[in-house]
Image (tube, rainbow, N blue to C red; front, top):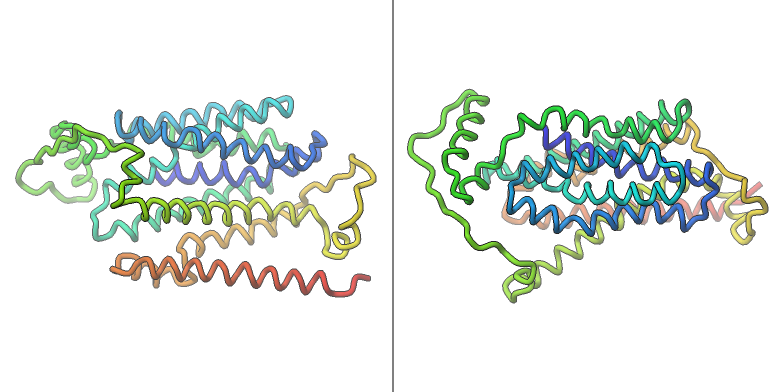
Length: 348
């Protein structure tokens, strides 16, 4: 549950970008590239910090790493609400992104408590927390933005981080990590705690310490045995991030662009007044909520969650993922074709 809350907080901070940036464009009269850079700076912070958080996790433990990165994100997320000018929001959101670079450690910690047989299903179910975070952020924006403004939304969006900070003392360390570090007694205490919570008992015997003295290096990813897999996984993650965040961030831009006819009429015209700006309306937030609700079947990676939960642990799991990719491509093509039909229709 606590790792799910951390994953939910990550989703809210990312969904926040598509909601706040249109508001900042209007209030601070920002150009398009300045608006885009607010989003880009968050991902730059994540890119810079991800390997650092990974090293901290491997050296000092998954629990400590996750707590540090969540507290870091909470601190600078709250400070972002007090940003007076554009330069301050850039610096503070970059530091928020720096903290979010360690959020995937929640998946690492969660995974190391799972049996191999149900690991695939359980990790997919963890994705539900991402969808919950995205939906909760939109609902929060519907209430806060029209009445209190974007600064209060930035502050309220740290709520899952506050919950995590207040509950992290109950977060156990990975038993696998403790065993690899030679702390068998601590690992056994963790397993006993989990067994008691599940109404079970630890099997008789003792843990065999397989102490890990050598750590992997980044260049090990490019040895002949792993080079192909490394490059393919990087490509898949790049394409996933590009398409997912591109669609999420584009949604509110489409709401601000107005109707297809007005967009067509003004496509070759420069704006006559820099002060002209379209704020998101309640209707826009409702539409955004409907599109965000698609995260739930989306996090299941297929239109039938039960089908995926059955297939994910099968030997040919990659075929399941390929089906998900083809579904995403089909959906994007259909959306493009439908938009083209709208733009080709006569404008009154």
